[in-house]
Amino acid sequence: MTARILLVDDDRMLCETLAAGLAHRGFDVIWKTSGDEALAWLDGAEADAVITDLAMKGLGGIELCRRIVENRGDIPVLVLTAFGSLDTAVAAIRAGAYDFISKPVQLDVLAIAVGRAIQHRSLRAEVKRLQLEVGHGPRFDDLIGASPAMQKVYSLVERVAESDASVLITGESGTGKEVVARALHKRSRRANGPFVAVNCAAMPEPLLESELFGHTKGAFTDAKDARPGLFVQARLGTIFLDEIGDMPLGLQPKLLRVVQERSVRPLGAATEIPVDVRIVAATNRDLESALEAKRFREDLYFRINVIRIELPPLRARPGDILPLAQHFSLQFAARANKDIRGISSSAAEKLLGYAWPGNVRELQNCIDRAVALARYDELTPDDLPERIRDHRSSNLVVLTDNPTELVSMEELERRYILRVLEAVGGNKTAAARVLGFERKTLYRKLEHFGVDGSSASTSLPTSSQPPSKR
Image 1 (cartoon, rainbow, N blue to C red):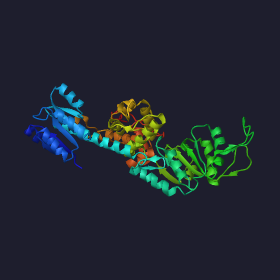
Image 2: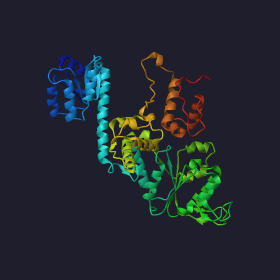
Image 3: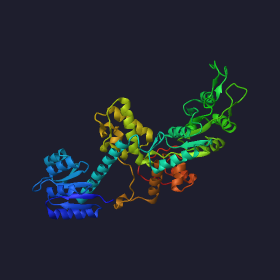
Image 4: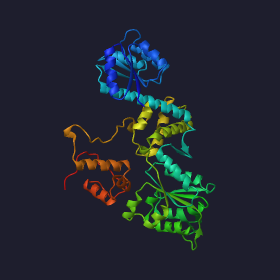
């Protein structure tokens, strides 16, 4: 919908000029030549923002601003001030104005300021809505969010929950893979059984083998008692193998046998023990690349990858950022016994402008910190980490009217490939799919651009200089 702006100035010619310029930039402008007329119009109409001059006959801009803020506090007010009139600008801000613009007015500057004010109003409304809906908002078990990407995840979880087929959950670190695994377990016929989680990257191979499969008394030094492994402990339930892409290569054949035969042989035992468990695995690695590099067994990959659930990064579901942040803020506030209602619109703007490379986990830690530092009943930008407060978008602009900034097709391709790779978290299989390349083609291009193509994650160069010719 087109944003409606109320413009107030006793200079009719200026009103006509500004109205025409803003209309050309996509705004619907209503203008009045006095503060009293503006207030009367607002009694029966809606505006997304108000622009008012300060020095007007009758009701002045400062008083008009104050009345609008008192009676229609959801409408941002921008004031026009004479060049260099700092005192009046300060007075306007104290009266509740959102921003001030110096005269003579530059239409592009005014349009940007108005757009920012309207966005601010929208964020305030969204924050208020979230505060009212907390506890009743869109969620799926402990998963929160209503974005199309998450709706696909919910739908797939619903469809496969009752199955005993192995599930592989993929996604960047911090996207909530264990939360999805727990939702699968909770909705399955095994919900009354145990949910047992193990991090395959957290232990050396001998200890992980003993942890998974168990051991008999005397199987190794310090094995003073027999101990059942996690597969046995998860009987009639679900075992969650987190970070399976980091499982030691020597242990993978033993896991493969368990997956195939549904039985385990504890260390030092002569017989196998049947196990009735559902296997859910997760990884943030590019397993297809690991297969090619011989770091992961192909037969095990196909056994655990019967059903695949891909979790989107937080940057791919920006509509879920504020509901998640609101949920975390109330959760941590209750734990800290603090009276915090939620997030200010200015803090929400900072949260939405950040890229969240650490995904939901990073957002959770950010809000935990903010609640700990909060001095008011809303989280403010000052409560956020510096990297988020001061973040500036790194979106790459390669189209320009300045001939000195134009680049070659090779440089354009380099920038775009690296931008896609960054967007998918360094996953080269996903990047190749987006780019329409074979993986080998992508690796060859990355090598040409001086980027390591063998690892699962990529360190992206920041230089905008083109690669050296070969």
